[in-house]
Length: 300
Image 1 (cartoon, helix red, strand yellow):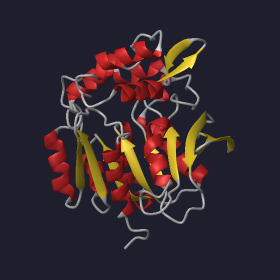
Image 2 (cartoon, one colour):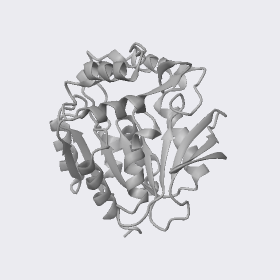
Image 3 (cartoon, rainbow, N blue to C red):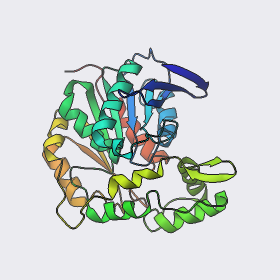
Image 4 (cartoon, rainbow, N blue to C red):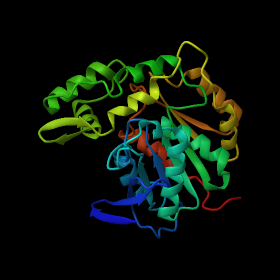
């Protein structure tokens, strides 16, 4: 595993099982005594989404300085793009995550999963239950609302390339403004800069546009399969479920069921945000840090 130094994190590169070069951000000391935190982003998102939360955790906001690792799935961020878009599926990504954990020397951790990352948390809980000490699921649950999936399918890989950062802000306001009413101009610019990168004078997405192919086969008119059996794997560990107040992917009814079925789960509603809350506002970061601080360092 090679690395390049970038403050306040190290960019580490490692190999997927099929040899593809993948990237993760590694914050804080590897030898930290406290439980590490592993962050898994959404479908078309990157490790950079967790920077504000990671910096807070590294600084000791969760009771003790934490090591935080955030992954770029294949085809996103600094990870290599896969020549076969069919490899952008949950099974291949799950194997990639396992490789990341091995490369990072992580045997137990608190997991934070946004959207698709939360699906990976449920799958990991079913396949490797001793790995997870606690989970934060950001605007995702065992039931996905077709309306939200349709909206996401409508823009992934299909947005025009903005000519400038102000144009990018305007574009994202058009796409997401109805859900994210609480964002400031600075927030919108921060989101645009997390989503796009400047290459050869153009602003391009930080993900492979072929990700759109993953969503095309979905039949949103038929009932979607649920993940309640996989969710059962989370019942023995602390769980925090975050929902954006205006989310169209995680319904209030599904959130209520998650809390009821788990028995001890906590929830957080983020006002003025939809799918998925950005985790850049101070109250959300403080809530997540407080939850992680209360996770026992050893299993009972």
